[in-house]
Image (tube, rainbow, N blue to C red; front, side, top):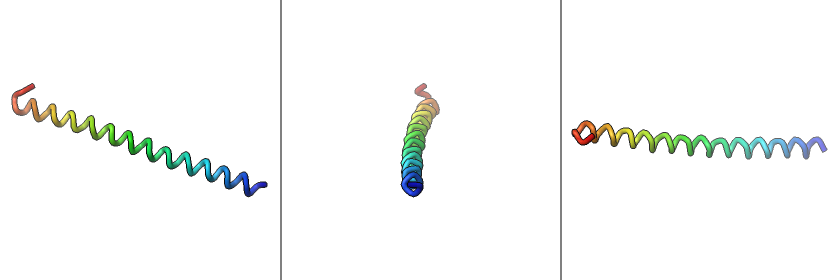
Length: 50
């Protein structure tokens, strides 16, 4: 019985860890897109088109 509980907890912990990685990856992509928009706007202002 203890083995089943331990394996269940390990499975839940692993699933939580994997989903956290996907969340962090998604947040990183969102931040990257926002940075690209800031760069584009800065380039437009540099060209005098603000």
